[in-house]
Length: 315
Image 1 (cartoon, rainbow, N blue to C red):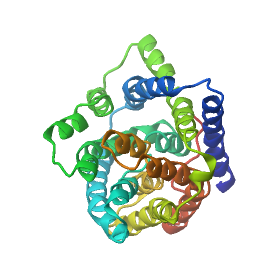
Image 2 (spheres, helix red, strand yellow; image 1 turned 90 degrees about the vertical axis):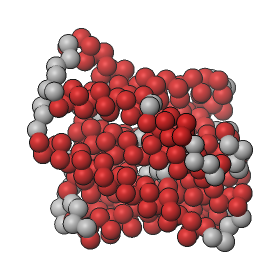
Image 3 (cartoon, one colour; image 1 turned 90 degrees about the horizontal axis):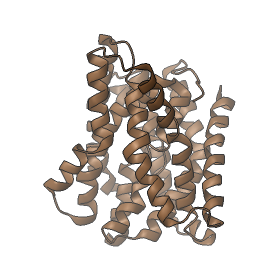
C-alpha cells in the first residue's frame, strides 16, 4: 500500500518536472503560466469540484460534509493564531511569509490530486468542502498577515470566487438530486480532469523562476517546511483524535494539512510587497520534501487509527 502511495506522489512530481523543464526552455513563459493559473482557478478546478458532487444524495454524506466544514474552519483559525508561536524570533519582514506558509497548505493544487488518488471521486467531494473555509480564510486572514488590515472587500473576494461558488452549485445538485444532461456532465468531467496535470505543470513552472542554489539556502525555510509538513498535520491528527473525530473526516483533514506551502504564498508576497524570494524558496523546498513526508504522514495516520482509511484509486 505504502509503495502505491509513493508511486502516486512520484507521478505528481514527474508532471511537475515537465512544467519546470518547459519553463526553463521558455516553452512556457510568465504570461502563459499566469494564464494557465487563471484557467485552473476559474474553469477547470470549479468544474472538477462540480462533477465531484454528482452523487446520489444521502444524509450520511451531508453530515460528514458538515463536520468537515466545521473542522476546516476551526483548524485554519487555530493555526493562523498559533503560527505566530513558531516564528517569534524571526524578523517581521519574513514572519508574514512563514506564518502564511504554515497556515495555508497547497490543499487544492496538490491536495485534490492526492486525495483523489486515495479516495476516488468522493475524495474531491469532501476536499472541496474542506476548501471552503480555507478559501475564505486565505482572502481574509491571509491578506491580514501581509497588510494588517481587516478588509471587507478581501473577505467578499474569499466568499464570492469560482471555487466556493462551484461548491454551492454542487451542493444544490447533490441535495436536490439533480441530474445534469449526459453530454454536459461528460464535458465538465473532461475539462475538470485536466486540473491535476495543469496544476502540477504550473507549480513546476513557478519553481523554475528561482535559482537552484538559492532554493536550498536558509535555515528558516527548512524550519518552516518541517512545521508545515510534519508538525501541523501531526498536531491536527492528535487534536482531532482527542476530540473523537475519525474516519474520512480525520483522513481528509490530516492529509490536506500535510500538503506543502500553498502556491498563493508567492502570489500574495508579490501582491502585498512581501519577501517573494523567501516565498518561492518555501514553496520549492516544502514541495520537494513533501515527496517523502506525505507518504510518512499517511503511514502515521494509518497506524494511528489502526485501519486503512482509504482505497487507492487512480485519477
